[in-house]
Amino acid sequence: MFEFIAASSLIFWSILAVLVVFATISTAKDDGGPLGFTIIIAAVFIALYSKTILVCGWKAILLTIVIYGVVGGIWSVIHWYRVTSRWVQEMKDGERYVSRIMVHHHRAEIISWIIFWPCSIVWEITGRLFTNLFEYLRGLYEGVVTKRNAEIDLITK
Image (cartoon, rainbow, N blue to C red; front, top):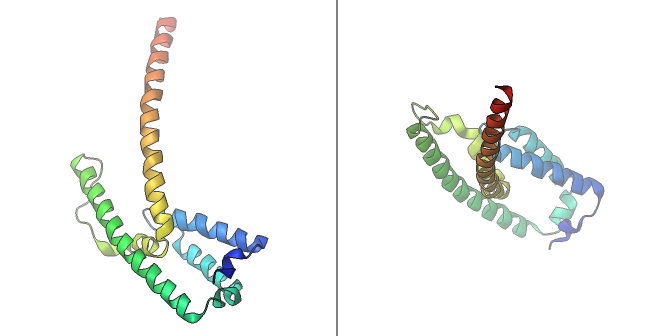
């Protein structure tokens, strides 16, 4: 059933790697990033390996597509709620100004969350982790810079 995963050609893994990179970029960008290009790469990938994918049978493929779409839809609603909550908080903090949040202005983002939900979930988890780590380290860097600037001020006076 999973014969297509065993494809070991360099082309297979190269196309898959590019697809994952662009899918991750598409889900991380506020404007959907290179969504169109990512869909083209996915279409080429499917076209090149269609015979191996079809070995699984139509029922398994359709069931996989339906389940994948449902999970993507659920994830997009959860993610949209989190993103809009973050925007409102940024507005309260004075970091963002939005007169109204309009769904149709974020079409590419939402579509990328649905289509590439595995990458979107991974980015949501790791992106927050790295952002929090950076914010923590930035505080340490600022402390070092403050100390060094004080030393420089003493030297230059």
